[in-house]
Image (cartoon, rainbow, N blue to C red; front, side):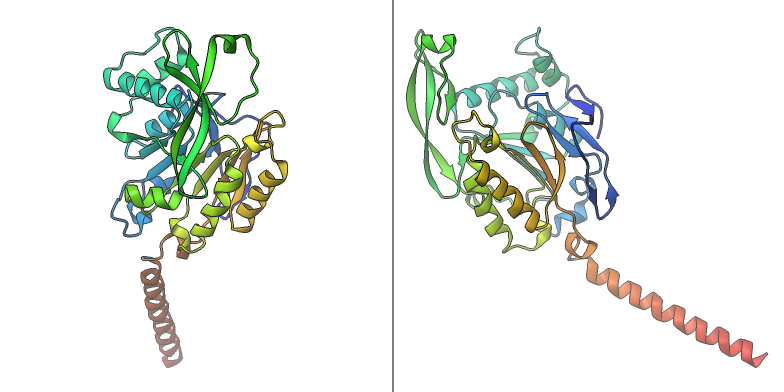
Length: 319
């Protein structure tokens, strides 16, 4: 990966595991709050053959759960200029934040000049056209998801949002809450709506709802050829945080075990419950449309070599 404001080398907090290609180097991208560890070598993002006949030759990254920090998404788009980054979050605070980010990208002027976060966005060298925002929640079914949103008492605007809250901070004394309903879609429905056949990198940060959404996604992926599965999958396991309203240790580890059973490997795991998984693929799985040609080419040259060996033996005997 290239260098950038939101990139730093790995630290001992991450443990990189071996894939079929051997050990991979890793880079932490994004802020300490919103970042993840990723493999350095993700050649499939720039390899047109890896699209396997997809009508969209560009690589695609999905990010569910934006909140108030998209430094990871910015760094990823900066490292891979042809990457299309789709952001998903229906909450009012997140939508407002992303539109401010888009304005900073378009103008090159930080929303807050004193902030390293906003200066990093302004100087990242990304294009507005690389990004799109969709106000949908990720779920195991299609329907609606309800959550609570803070309302600023002075302006009446919804300024932040939670799927549930037990906050008693002093800042909350100036707020009241409104219940908001947002459209919820399965990953399959979203991909069909956006006409995406492949997701190369998938990030999920959905406040504990991963315990319901991931099993549904895996069931769908198992009906696909493996080259269409996300090659890198990052999950912020809020369900492993004891103080989180959706704490569910059993459900969280069930998700990890299901992914491992399906072939994903834990690439990096922070001391906090953020996981990065990678999907090792054989050449046959990664390039199903090209692999038969490689086999035919190998058989052709193997046959030619055997013929030459027989001719050489005959010539030696003739001498």
